[in-house]
Image (tube, rainbow, N blue to C red; front, side):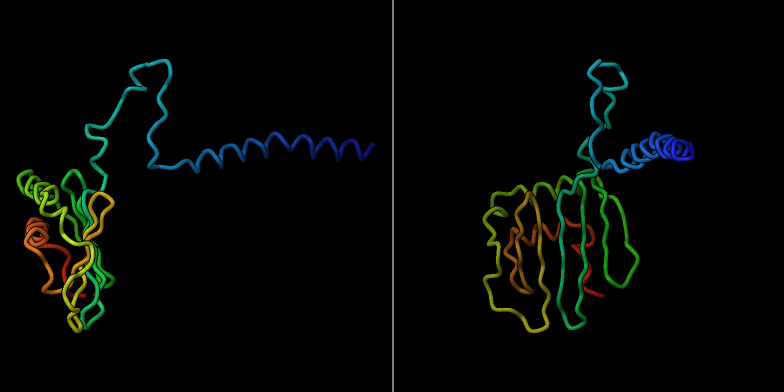
Length: 167
């Protein structure tokens, strides 16, 4: 009789354990994943953000190197918000004006920018900086003194002219 009771307790715990696993796994859903639409087509299922791309990255610019070993990043999002991160400081954030964002998009979409070489063409500068601009899955890398006019136009349109070169 004892074995029946013991078995009953074990089997009685299975639904509770299964429920706990379902809750735990359900909480692991990808927070960035878009909501699954409701096949009923109800109003709740058609709810969307004003601009689904607003949090998407428009351009990322990194600067590294220099005597102090800088490694700073600037990320500009589709909605014009931006963040600068450096190893030694707190992230800085801001938002571009609509006109400034339009200027940046125009510089990035300029056919001349599409022709900028992906790797530096000049000799490296001792203790110089290396810049990497990623836009639409294409990364352009340039060194100090190696910025073609189209790439310089992009830097001129970035908040604060791009990520800082100080640590």
